[in-house]
Image (tube, rainbow, N blue to C red; front, top):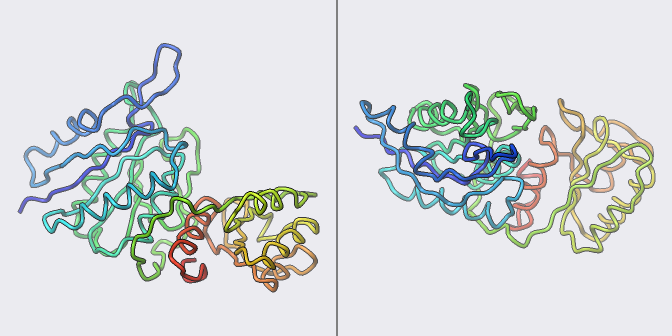
Amino acid sequence: MTKKIVVFTTGGTIACTAGPDGALIPTVSGEDLVRPVAERFADSSIVCEVRELTRLDSSSMTFADVDEIVAAVQEALDDPETTGVVVTHGTDSMEETAIAVDTFHSDSRPVVFTGAQKPSNHPEADGPENLFDAIVIAADDSARDIGCLIVFNHAVIPARGAVKWHTSDNLAFATNGPEEPTRPDPILPHPLAGIQVDIIPAYAGAPRTLIDAAVAAGSQGLVIEAMGAGNVGREMAQGVADALDQGIPVIITTRVPRGEVHGSYGGAGGGATLAAKGALGSTYFRAAQARVLLAIALATGHHPATLF
């Protein structure tokens, strides 16, 4: 039987070419990006259908762009003939879009994100092989019922807990989550555009000014990128407490690359103290994905704890 893989292209390094000055710009169309890879499946049962959504550097992605991708994936899966979906995406914010798609994903068929670390016209471009692998995985029955995946440099990584861990290595992504993360019950898609959640970094002696500025600017939720297992200094802790008193949900994550957030420490800004005041630990999620999960909770009326 023919397996139809719908490939959405959104830009990113995989669609970039380097100009005379070396600067990378996404110039490659979806058709031109996918065609040479799709030709490798000519003698197989896999057929690729290409739909170009946008052509962006993913650092420019907004929640409105994420909404468009979520809607496009849902539309593709409304077709019973679709076997799986692949999304090509820039690596800068791939983990954010992937966790949004995963949280709204209620279908058994796989959605696979991929991209590249080297531009399309690089002599050692990694994009074509990544895209080939992503299509293979999207067509594989073993990828069903496990949610959204990131496929990169032959690694297959669940979206939940994924992080971009290297700026230039071909293996761009790693995971801080378990090998088979538990997924919450899927949520019906809801627009995220207009939801404001801000990430505030903590550091030794950090003041509360960034928290106060975010609240004054209309932030509906805060993600605090804390130190250690989830600790901040005294002054920032008071800012967190005041935000919570105003009904603004606060998620505590950490700047540490590995491990889970846990409220073990007392003191003014210790994780246990923050938890007692109502802040929620992000478990294994880091700041970028924690922000998306909190935004989804705010947009849909779900308690954030159900998504973490």
